[in-house]
Length: 179
Image 1 (cartoon, rainbow, N blue to C red):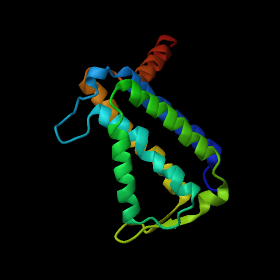
Image 2 (tube, one colour):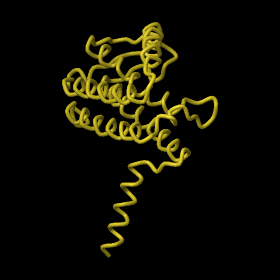
Image 3 (cartoon, rainbow, N blue to C red):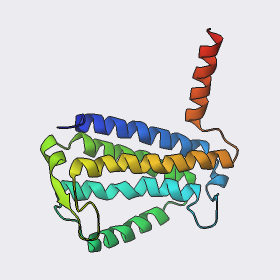
Image 4 (cartoon, helix red, strand yellow):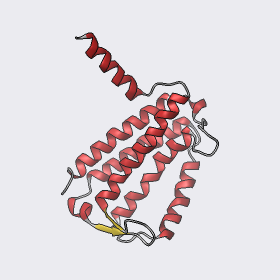
């Protein structure tokens, strides 16, 4: 297997999700409706999206779907939107992030190298027209990190310093103090 296997993929996803949950816990519930501009997702919308959006991968890759069609995505999008809309409070969102994150990580741990190497295809005009299951599953982590960058900027806009930034600043201060 190229990369480092499903166990390490699961562990790296757990790290990414742990940092997302930390943001979800730090942002006050009254700021979950904050939007940088009217046409973008709110903090709560992004967190709910991250809690629900990747879950379709479990069914798709367990059933080893070899070709993804637009109708499948449309059906999945409707289910995702309904599940996301059901998350009304900060507590529900944090719980969904935590529980679904562990469910997904546990799934990732169980995917064998042969399955990760399988190629799946997509209809035109999707490019590339095919990807390995590994690339698709790695995309879950990339997707979350993309949105987590947005969340960290939104934290700055509501007056918070993100926890990863605080940790880096503390390490820099300790290093400077020890010189």
